[in-house]
Amino acid sequence: MTHADSSGQLTTNSGFPLSVIAPTRFHAYRADERRYSLSATADFLADAGFGGADLSFDTLEAPRDFDGDEGFRAVLWSFANRAAARGLSLPLCHLPFYMPSPDDSAAMSRFARLMRDALRASAGVGIPTAVVHPIVRHGSVCRREAWRAENIAFLRPLCEEACRLR
Image (cartoon, rainbow, N blue to C red; front, side, top):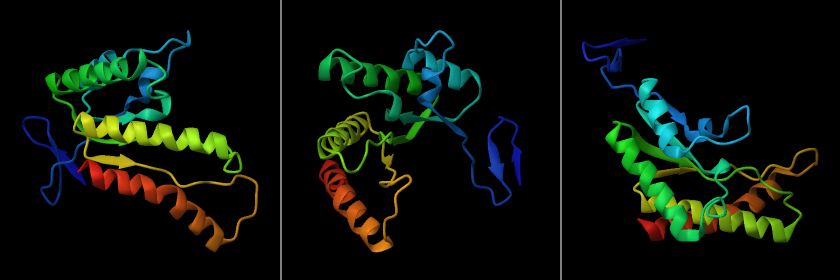
């Protein structure tokens, strides 16, 4: 059970503060198919009372959505600064997870590069935790041992990269 103190901070019965965060994916949801800027999304999340944001790279296509690497970094720093100014924490991000077919090696290579770019970008703005999703083979049969080995081979380099960024 949770309750709010006089400042509105939610706490659990055990006294630990509880923060509700929301994904920045909200910036992607517009009826006219245009996206809200990440800064506008930070304002929305703060105005709605969220304590933080989950920077969702699944909708960013890093850094292709922006003017190259420099434009991408500038947008992320602008977002991080706006979030901080509005009192939002950035405790985690979601790396890209709209995975191509695992059997398409060229597409998987591009996907792995997007994941590494997003990991580096999140570390660059001080986000301490990155969420990844395992390879999923929709509609195909894969033995547990093969699935495990495939995921370890794909995700281990990402974990190694994260260790280098610490």
